[in-house]
Amino acid sequence: MNIKIAIDGPSGSGKSTLAKNIAKALGLVYVDTGALYRTVGLFAKRCGVPLEEASKVVKFLPKADLALKYTEAGQRVLLNGEDVSDLIRTPEMSMYASAVSAVPAVRAFLLEIQKKMTTEGGVVMDGRDIGTVIMPDADVKLFMEASAKARARRRYEELCERGDTSTEEEVLKDIIKRDSNDQNRTVAPAIPADDAIFIDNSDYTPEETLKVALKIIKDKLCRTL
Ligand code: DC
Image 1 (cartoon, protein in one colour):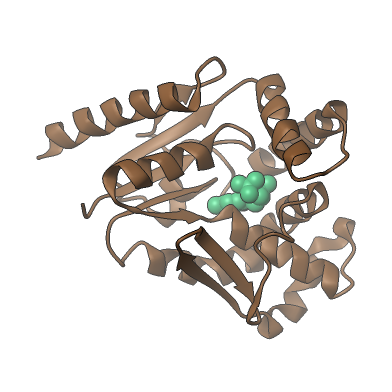
Image 2: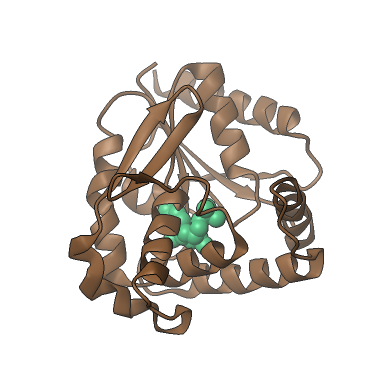
């Protein structure tokens, strides 16, 4: 199917789980745009840029070559040819990603690679500004919500599975800080598009969320056909 679905929402709101499930159900390519910001965060750290001075990454950007690759295992992200997909999934990289994502030159740097992905066939893309900036013409725009507590619990469980030792309180604190950074930045803040449809999945399983989303997609597409 050659349709475009935008999914936005705060961290831990279940965007990526839903996006992967929709991609599988409808045969679309899933693009995780957060991975790009995380990779720039990793690059900033490797360049010696302190978290509190994230904008200093800008002068190093010409030396960063980012690419997305699609394999059986899903999306992989390459930084100067190195697969960094696993290295970017730490709490430290979450905070770095949020910090660099507020820098206008970083957003401009990542715009082209994201826009390109929207022109290569059916896609479901998740992030913070997909419905507002990257795919304002998406066929369906979903905005995911869940309480901060529910989101922290999910992130905590995910991190535990990866062997991370953060406590649930630390994860909640990071989530609240990131929500505030992402929603209050001046460029492309993480806010819903005017025509986004909200899904609060605090009390839904991933399967229930998928069912709700597929119904919304079907209704929306029937109306526009
Ligand atoms: O979705 P995620 O947690 O992997 O995203 C990491 C950070 O990247 C998030 O705190 C905000 C930023 N981000 C963004 O600003 N715009 C996007 N489209 C995706 C992510």
